[in-house]
Length: 75
Image (cartoon, rainbow, N blue to C red):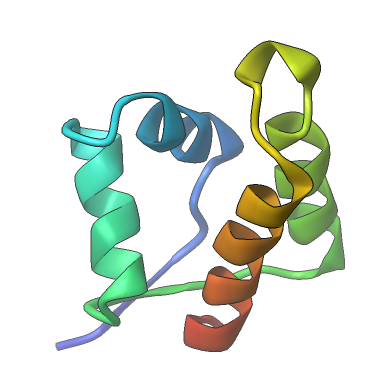
């Protein structure tokens, strides 16, 4: 059974900061296609804006990879 989910930005940030965590598992499930992320332009924009905050030290390439993976696997 597939589950369609909107992944909260805080869950995404937590997953990026600590991969071996419950949020990290959720993102892994999304990347593996076991859950289907649901997003629109506003959610995508929020993901990018938050993940690109200087305090997270993420490059644009990393953020683009994450968001693009969600777009490929998602709805």
